[in-house]
Image 1 (cartoon, rainbow, N blue to C red):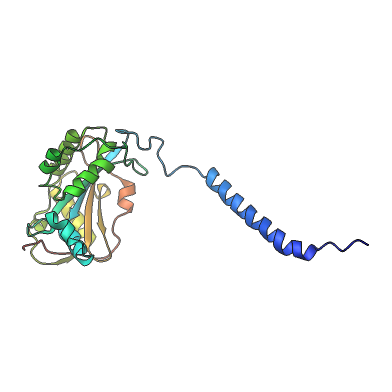
Image 2 (image 1 turned 60 degrees about the vertical axis):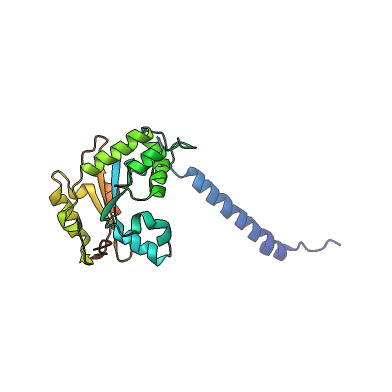
Length: 239
């Protein structure tokens, strides 16, 4: 006599396994079908980009954070007694949506003499080497030309005088920092600058520039600006 088919066991185990497999397959197909809108078609092709972002870091904030994390020793070049204010974090090639990075692997070797020549603007050797590897290789230029372009970009931006010798902590709305830069730099508009922050402190001022280093709007960078009502600017070292 034939035994009844064990339908209950199949429905609980086999069906569950089937559904799990189907779910994974559906997820994989969804990823495969998703449009690559986040990646530019020129992705990581050296020299193929739309504009630059000149990133100016508020050095006292960086040094306070390094101290809190116990990393001050590794940041001694920047966080010693020399009173740095805004320093260059980098000059970053950008697409209208997204950005390239590490466009040559391995990157062309950066001569130490070029690195040393930039320490007045970018006071950390490790930062300079990293910026070349990650961003400079995407510029389409050799190392010397890229760092000369950084120097020209920095020279095109005037730091507001009230931030050149800050000797006491300052609490300020990000919009006030932005307005001060706009006032000090004719032709710079609110759509071409973004102030960034961490939980409490000013981090950076980012200014968008065309390939010929003219100020230009950049909606994507502006959307990432600090949304806090106020940020703290720690005082300069030695102040």
